Image: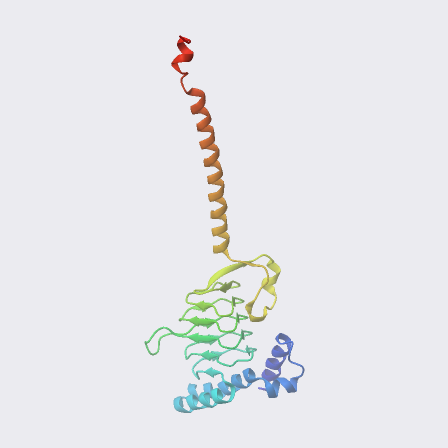
Length: 237
């Protein structure tokens, strides 16, 4: 257990430049406290002590502002940064090395008990502040979910999604895909929808220019083919 704790603290020190020491992380980081309170609640839950698991989870919510259902599965080296307002549902799964910021919801849209209602985050996923991931689908390994995005369908591995509803954006720098991105923000992102719209606008402008040139040429041809006046054909009288 202590080796796992040391590993979790090391992950926080690596990802948060505001963390200055192991003691500071151990005593002042509610995300770390919430993870270990959840471990106890999950232990109760797996042993059919459902009420005790829920009550332990509720105590953790009071203390940290982070609500993790005791049925959720949380991997190793998961960092919940700041954490206030984070909600993780019963059938959610959070993979190893994930980073979750404040205000995130891993929620369910189904009302059927026992069904897979909440999302599964792969390894190394980053979820920006205020993002909502709703449904029993997977977010692939290394994916990024931008702040305040609403994700309602599966996210490919390594992709960055933003918006409401969230859609995949592209990064101009391929090497950024291998780097940690705080709050899931990657510089110089390109929205493929905006890119497609810009291409349509440029194509429309090209068509307008071609049409004007064609109209001008047709006007010239009409002037050249216009018959001469009768006074010029028969001479003046």
